[in-house]
Length: 195
Image (cartoon, rainbow, N blue to C red; front, side):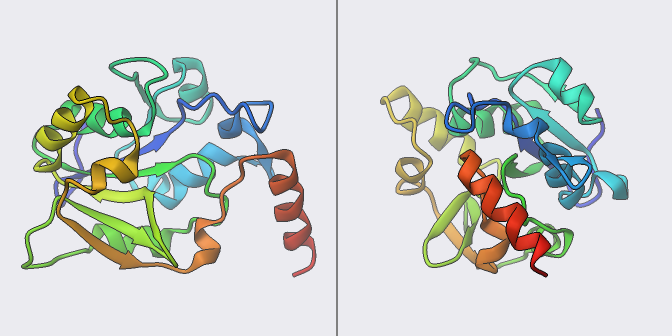
């Protein structure tokens, strides 16, 4: 695996159970493209960037045209998946996105790629009316803190954020529309045909 210019790798989280959807969300067909692949393309998979599929199975990752990075602990959730990516690329930041963001686009991800601040921070989190930690740019400085909170029993992203130095990047709420249920999927498809 290679690391991109700007010392930043990107990963699509594909390890969730998709229990509310009833089928693997990463593989749902949206206008001829699997949902996980759409997110990978927003992360720059078509622009020569390193984009991995973190979690899930190697078969799913390869069907999305991505290299697979298995979870350190299978089925352990997105917070530990972030730790997996950071640990696999110790010299890099990691832009991580959930596989169910149907509206995520390249322009939004570029904001994270180009992010710069003199203020110290461990993570840059997407923000709409609230923080959206399933789209974020994580720095290596976050890893020991994630490890610490996980060892104390914390598994939620929001719980970890409470211990981290967080910068927020305001994004359009439409790009954060995630598909968790068949009803979400149907609403999204209807919205596309009404354009």
